[in-house]
Length: 406
Image (tube, rainbow, N blue to C red; front, side, top):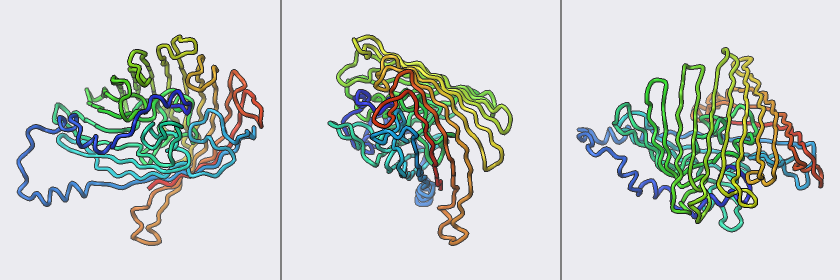
């Protein structure tokens, strides 16, 4: 699950060769069409066409964050990726190589490789670019590596096998194909949900308005299984129109190594609503618990709610606000029994990056630049934020974030 505390790292597991899993797994073999179409009279052309469908895209994010508490050591408490204070950093640089699969009988894949001073050190799976003994992550990660196949069942049953970013939550790790309206991540994202899941995901469009997904995985942020059990997750998405969507998520399974008795249950509802053309609202509500995880052996719970508002003044300039509350009464998520509150304001300006104007060979690197300052105030019901060498119940940070997408 998403937290940077040692107990949460126990969800993770021993290293495996992920690409080998994708290619050698019997689940992958079962996903293939048992009756393939007759060979093309021009197989070379068909083969070349499939390879021509491979795309290369990427993103780079840079940031600087300043905490008015001047914490010693210089770390922002309960932040996910913007944890370094008073330091210019490369958050993440991403390269995605993929071949999309969208129609029946199509096969595809996605490899998402990231490096950086912040994101990969947090998202790295235990045993895969993370030290088994110390729990320390590396400045690189295979965030996603999976194969896809659309089985010719009904409208098309999509199967993804491998490691993928979790579909749970409103906020995302972020990449060239989607990033959050705020620069910093919320408490629900960081301490309530998994970052990645490894296993099989099946997705199907039930009707024009309803779609569903079922996941069978090794657990939360786990590459290999540690307790002999699987984690089951499900998602139902209702899209009323192009302006409104409601997503219901559920997760169930044991998350501790060598323990398949104590279960984690997670319930989440995410909603988005385009009120008018320039204004979009969203909400993310979470309730979760784990058996016998609280101090003293009791059941632990954590819960949160976050609201988002984005107003686009022009095509290039917008303003985003987030307000959130996250309760961790047993302290198993954040390390301290507390309730956290956060309020975040993020202006954003998007400018084109047309390198091909100078040299036509650089056309593939054409994209856009995102420039956004951020102002955030956090509160806690306890003195859990560093202030100098002491502690206080609040922190205020300002940040500047630059993103290049191609």
